[in-house]
Image 1 (spheres, rainbow, N blue to C red):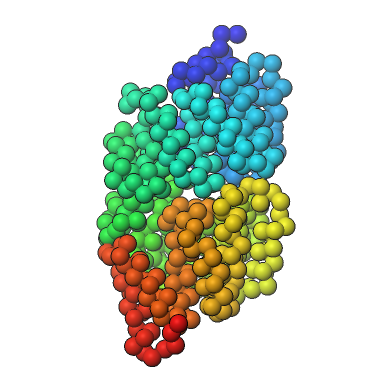
Image 2: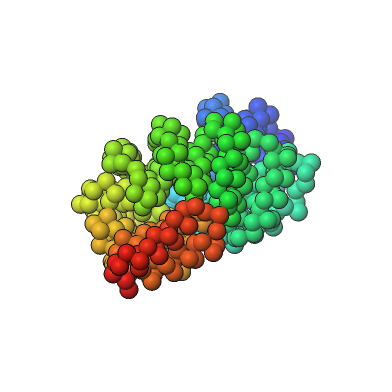
Length: 446
């Protein structure tokens, strides 16, 4: 067998050019998040069930999806393990995927990272390791892992623009907003339809403001991300966040109803829906009907609650829709579900219990308890299991609890922090005005 090389120059264990071409198309689909990767590789595997690189890609894509995919993932791992021709690199992919299958997310991330260390042009290992770094809250690695392999690539490589988009995300999550801005725009010069780079720019504008620039950016790029399977809901969520920041509550509700609610299905989309509706709930908007629709989907798709981060958002939905007994019952999974615990990051788990306690307390208007629970974790809130922008929900919740609980001094301190950090935010200015109104209205203070 004359083994073929992929377009990055790595040796595969196939001599079938058609199988390798399918691998390249599926990998390109993963980079673009267009939703076609699994269907493309499934067709290739149906034609060539022994295609080891194809099984590596299916396994990696399923690990990235984090869905209830045990049977398909097991089949691909087993196919590589029993293959007489799979090469050393492909077998290491199988070992990493098996580690994830066994519930050891951190171990899987290490093994994929080890493959990448020895093969810095292994695009699949990079995609999966990068995704697991985010899932595990490993912010420095989110940046450094891509930084380490970039010297092995150049602008002559067709996928270089995608790598720059990944690098940009690592930079923004580590607070290097100028570096992220530059890398994201360079990515878009090379790959104009890279929704991941559009996403990074949205993050930079979310962190720094002003919100009208974020709205303008996402409106201008909506023809790209609006049809992207991986980003259309999440970037609509970002658009709604910018609208809330600009005090355009009606527009944010419209964005939810038009761009988010019709497409809800998997765990990530339900997280975005719950996170946005909770922010609207804190703002005094939203509706019980919207919450009920989301809780129905959480109930119907129980398998999407795979990590503590998912669980927090599911509990949030039930608490906000006044289904308190169901919320408490769901919260028990945090201690009783061994696989959920295994697939959650260590810091994500540490934050989840007090955060769930705070959400349950807020839902029954016990604002003092909500404040006390979040106060225990506020300094580590940015390690909640999502992005810095997603974790801001924790800061918003304790501030709203302070306002509703008439804790004037705490509310003023928290609101002032937000205004100093992002003075262009109309939302932050509104929150600060409310905090100062507590004292002038003669309300109880602490």
